[in-house]
Image (tube, rainbow, N blue to C red; front, side, top):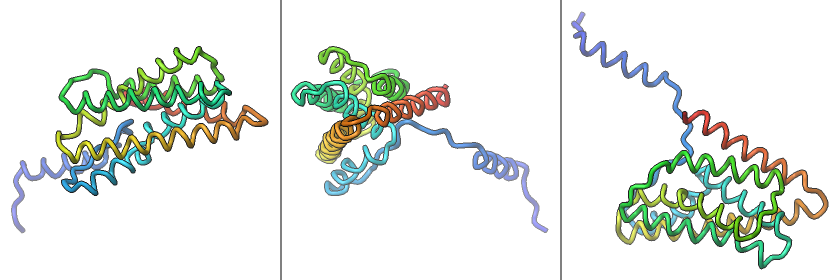
Length: 205
């Protein structure tokens, strides 16, 4: 029977323990390393749909803007603020700016935006745009800080910007439909998003 060294046994036990440990739920998934432009654009388009944190935040912004501001001109201001500051954050992160507390503030954005939606908060539109813009910066930075410079990265950013606008529009349309007769579906959605954000914050501590 072949002999097994103590170091080999130790490495095997360590590997088994690592497999047995629960994998933490991350609010922000990883990014692709595809070198070709088509893959980078495709991954950018799909990334907001695969990242639950980004998807829920963007839906919350669209739902909240539609329910809080009946005027379409006022309602569109909030999602546009999120989208523009998201782009700024992505570009600054890609440029190498080290931004602290990115993941905690992404988690906090779900909690806060969910509460705004659940409570049907009617802030002045400028205040609402500032609030969502603050959180959007960190959502964008999370992308940009992990992307290399170059055309492929810019295509990835283009892709997730397109998806972001589409998700906002989906949220706004859904918000208008849900609140046409009753507000409780939108409130329930907000409560669910806030609860998910709270779970992430507790799990991340």
